[in-house]
Length: 275
Ligand SMILES: *[C@@H]1O[C@H](CO)[C@@H](O)[C@H](O)[C@H]1NC(C)=O
Ligand SMILES: *[C@@H]1O[C@H](CO)[C@@H](O)[C@H](O)[C@H]1NC(C)=O
Ligand SMILES: *[C@@H]1O[C@H](CO)[C@@H](O)[C@H](O)[C@H]1NC(C)=O
Ligand SMILES: *[C@@H]1O[C@H](CO)[C@@H](O)[C@H](O)[C@H]1NC(C)=O
Image (cartoon, rainbow, N blue to C red; front, side, top):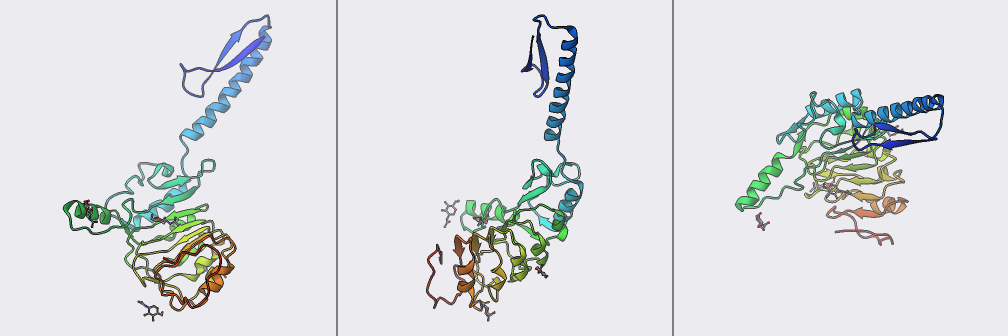
C-alpha cells in the first residue's frame, strides 16, 4: 500500500491532504493512517498558527509603550507602537526572538542620519525632515523589562544634553549599544563597564566635549568588546586610555578622534584609527 502526504497547492499552505492509492490494504490500516495523518495535520497547523500570529509578551509590550510615552516623536515614526496594533513584534524598529517572542533588538536611529544644514531649498527641506525625525525626551527605565534585549540603537537622535541614563548599565544582555550623535552629554556612566557581553559600544559624536570620561578603568572588564568609538568625547583626563585599551582582548576597532588625548605614548600593533 502507499499513502502520500501531499502539500496541495489548491489548499492553504500547511494543510496536508491525503492521497490514497489502494493497493490491497485493509480498511483498518487505512483508518490508522488517516488518524496518524490527522495528527500530522494538527501539529503543522498549530505550529504554523504560532508562527503567523505570534504575539509579543504582554509585559514587554507595556514596557515599550511606557518607553514611547516618555519620548518626543514629532514625525510619528513610532506611530505603529499603539494599543490597537497589538503585536509589538511588528512595530517599527522592534525585532523579537523568533521562538520565544522576547524583544531582542530596538533599531531607533534617525533614518535620515546626521542632520546637516544646507542653505539650498532642497537641502533645507531635508534638514527639517531630518530634525523632525529626531527622537528626544527621556529614556524610561521600563527598558529593563526587556529581559533579552541585546541590541539598542538610538543613534542620530537629539536628547538635548541629558546624561546617558545610568540604568542602561543594568541591561545586562546588551551586545550592541549605539548612542552615537544622539545628543547625550556629561559624564559617561562608568557602570557601562558592567555590560559584560558588549561587542560594540559606539558613543561617538560630532561635537567636542559633550560627553566626557575621567578614565578608562570602567572599560577594563569588557572582554568581548570588539568595537569602541568615543570620538569627540573629552578624554583629556583619561591618561590610562592606552594602557586599558591595549589590554582589551577582543578589541578590533578603536575610534578616538578629536578626544584631546595624551598621544605622547607609543602606539600598539593592532588596528587603531585616530581620525
Ligand atoms: C545642498 O543640497 C543640494 C540639493 O540636495 C545638493 O545638490 C548640494 O550639493 C548640497 N550642498 C552641500 C554643500 O551639501
Ligand atoms: C552607529 O550608528 C551610526 C548611525 O546610525 C552608524 O553610522 C554607525 O556605523 C553605528 N556604529 C556602529 C559601530 O555600528
Ligand atoms: C556594577 O556591578 C557591580 C558588581 O555586580 C556592582 O557592585 C555595581 O553596583 C554595578 N554598577 C553599576 C553602575 O551598575
Ligand atoms: C575637558 O575636560 C576638562 C577636565 O574635565 C575640562 O577642564 C575642560 O574644560 C573640558 N573641555 C571642554 C572643551 O569642555
